[in-house]
Length: 207
Image 1 (cartoon, rainbow, N blue to C red):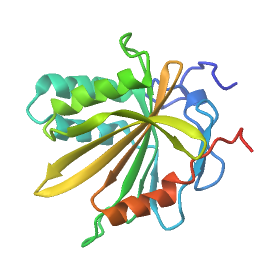
Image 2: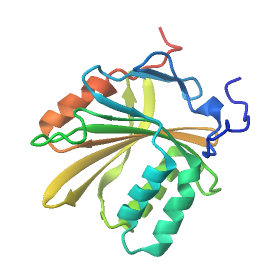
Image 3: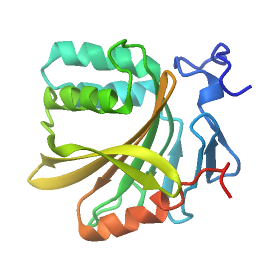
Image 4: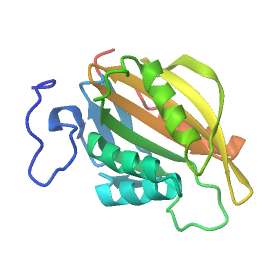
């Protein structure tokens, strides 16, 4: 049942047990009963499900740069993360367009210092500030509702090759698990486009 910590299925290295990973009700409809939410990936969006440990480790190595301590910490953290999906408005190889994206992750929290969603966002900020990307966080976390689901949200910006990227982190914590949506945009148009996906988030338990 939802909330029962069964062993991960064969071949699944994540510490996020299957009951908390959510499920796909259809090809593009995702539901997670533990976090009381559902959403739909628009048909025209590029969708990848179940990001592998290897991809996360490569991404973590890139972000950590020459910081070996951070690289080791991020590689260890991969085992506590499950990625239901990565959605991009256009396929990754598309040229000449900024590409709004939404990454959904679920993390099993093992650090005793992370008791709330705000604690989690603080840990995210500290990690990114020691990375090669050097994200600049703006203001404090805010309580926001997506559909009828409440999240804690934090905004940040970073620069790659003279291009400015905007990020919003939407976080919800239930028990020892956190679900997070990392939304990346480059323009006001991207902000509107990403709402095609984010506006579908709702609680299946509500009318």
